[in-house]
Image (tube, rainbow, N blue to C red; front, side):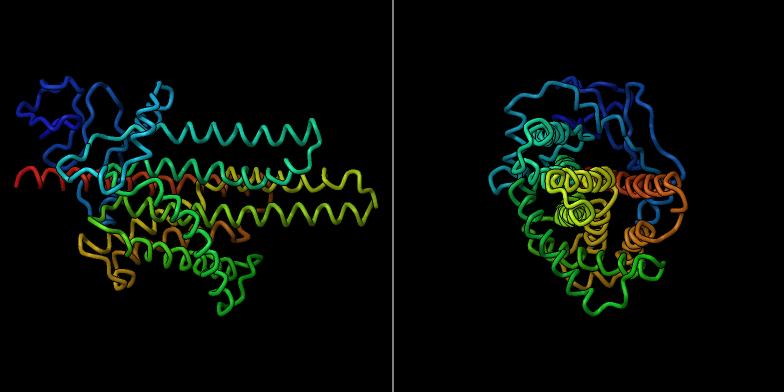
Length: 389
């Protein structure tokens, strides 16, 4: 076994700290399971074991959930930020033997969240206090960006191979988001009725929209240069899904805002409150879709990206991977959750509807965290194989 910080070989299993750099040891044992010393509670159980076996793994996976937020409140220098922004280029991508395989402690995503929230509140303040209509028109754009971009940066930080640049990530976000939306609209032209007021229509929507995202995600994966890791699939899929979510949500927010404003004008003839009517309806849409978006398109597409690379089994990309059982038995998860999301089930009361949505968000994130953990195991295993050669 090796120290996850400096790579020094550890020969004594009882060691708690690396004798070279002093890092508290967090390593993968002989059974491939991540072990963390220092009293950190392991999050593992039947669900993780079954899902791990479902995707071809063995044994249980320990989810170090505390590490996902442990870096948020710590001070980070400008140099640390710059290191994240410049990684993934031809000159800054580490070799397989240089990759740090310790459980990552992401933090940049929290700074991005705070920054976007500050901009959002500033725009809202300009409208509510000063009455500036131009600021109002920017609220839906920034509001729908907050959650998807935050989650996308989180995926970027969890990509420990550091072989995808920030520039490429946001290129996939923009181009992939528009392309997947366009591809989906084309598919709807030939698909059966997609009326989500009934279960069959919700199933059609789930299938069509996920096919649209899978196709574009697979395209960007096919253009990746160098070795592919499972974590790369989560980044590529997450970027496509985030773009899809933002463009779709902006459309909904503006549509509902304009419709509500038009209805207000027709009913009252009062143009003085027209913009306020637009704002109220638009804001409701932004808040609801923004709150739920981390468990929607971005998470579903991230699972699909993971499934594509898992189906490749270390080989170069080939479109036939989308027909493999390995891919198909995973991709039904986002399709099913998407269909349930849109289906008119458990919506008799607002409370039941809220419970349904929370359940769906939590469900996909349990799957995602297990897949991220499996991706970290893959990196650790491949680095170990390189060091033993």
